[in-house]
Image: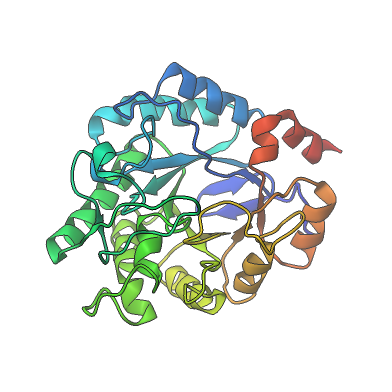
Length: 330
């Protein structure tokens, strides 16, 4: 019977248990996006949780996709040394190291990116309590650049010795904007139908998989947008099936255009797990469940009923990494 300490092998890596630390912005990089001592100390602390995998926070693949002043960058080979130091430090604690790749798209400011904001359509991304800039609609040349930026970032991650890369396609950031009919109202091959809206994601995944057959690829998708007329869970099931067909190893199910915060209508532990459960039932690949998870009982019940294959424990481990060890040893 599967429990919280059950191992799972993916490609050549063994996940020693079913707990992962998900990506959480730390604002510990310097203003150019380089790893700092504060970054190293922060992730060493998270790795002491004894989780099977620590996913390093969302890291911008190009300056025009940056969304916070001290956000980590994975946009230049000059950053490989610091990123390798970070991944090796995590792995020294017998924890797998992953890193999340992101382009913010319209969920940023032109002041921060130093230029124009590019998105699928000239529609501002809805964010609670804020009114964001209206971006420019991406040209086909912009799309090619975006794909190349993700491919370069994946290459940097491999050079930096990460075990896992995760493409961030949720929380209202760039690729989520392509997936969602709210923010993608194009009429060309990158808009309209569900698979056209997901085309850019499929193309990025396909190219990375072709370059790195043994690399573990995760995609963080929205279980749904949590906005009327947005991406639905049925859409996300179809996208997940296609991603697995293209070689994605892990599907990390979170929230969509509405951002990462708890949706108003969700309560209690595992408030996004229902979406993960629906997706896990339809794909032959591990799914990560997330949303206020913090107890061993909840994790093991959901592992046994196959709601997910991994539990992401974020805020609770951030507050007290030792609680991870406690869950795994009780």
